[in-house]
Length: 499
Image 1 (cartoon, rainbow, N blue to C red):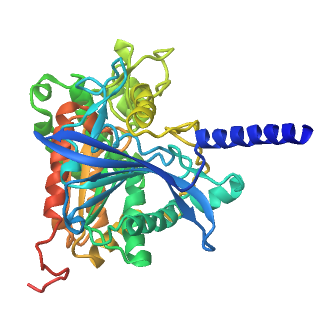
Image 2: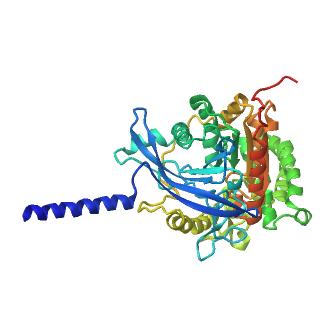
Image 3: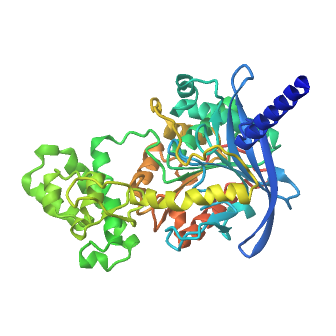
């Protein structure tokens, strides 16, 4: 009787442990698939969505992590060899692939208002602008983002050395992509990478790593709100290049002189960009040896273009830190403005100070995205787990040494005549501003030989320009156009021809 009772107790314990493990869903290699449909551009698109984890293996074939992903595949396609595949990453570097997933390119988007602000009830709705009509999409979450995790046996030092750094990140993600493409029979498909924010050095570096280490050649790389990409700007360009962004933010908040404020934003910016390159950069380069009369003249022009006073500009020796700008522009009204999207307003404890107390825009985004993505996986994609979804996960310290990703992308383009690049920026993004995104392209290709395969697009919003409904449509249409023109005509060889 005691033996039987012990067996029952053991069985109940085993079942309880198994159920707990299933609820936590710690398996590194498991997926669930659901069917879906969405109306895009007036036409119904049927698809299947596969959600779960695919392992990361070490050199000895041992699983060391499981990367969480969601893969959308249109189901009425006869030949997937001709069907483009878009591999999507966000940034941080510790950010989940949530932002573009449920607000930009995916078949469902979160409930927000026309300008991108949170509304209740939280939830998900169809995305009539999704690119799923023209390409399949996989959203990938690096280690410690989303539901992705390393194995429990791995200590923090080993995790850091294996996953958390510019080069480490690129190396293991390239291997993961290779495995994903092989598992899903997508080697013949045209392939694109899209990355946002820190996702831009990630996909830039991946473009060369995939070519040189996995012999996987891409058709396109899309950089959404790019970082520096490891391209040196120096103290002078680093200070001068912010001015066009300052103009855009000041224009939005109606802080410019009447003659400028009466013009449309895109009419003003070329004038400010030219001034930045031709006058401001040389002036700042002279430092304390700039004649006083010139210094005052430059300060007056910066004031005209930025909405700040000549006094504070002179106090900063013509070099206005972005943190100060966010605090100063609307100081007299008692507000600060957002870093990643300067349309947003914040309220600080004190009007005094040199920087905002918090990021108004990021707080707003977390407000709307966090309930939406947790609701979406459980109720739409049938993915159940008790693991915490990391909107931002622990990935520090991040090894930023040897960041050559911008130059890696140029090298990948040089080696691959099929490879094109699209850059998308929001005018009101103060974290990864639009003018420095242009500057990246100029410095990445100093010869100008690749400029016909690189293009830049600007939008009237911020870091996540797609949150504004008008830009959501335009930006997705720009992606469709880019994908279409990056697909070579049948039989067209990948080669350079002498003219």
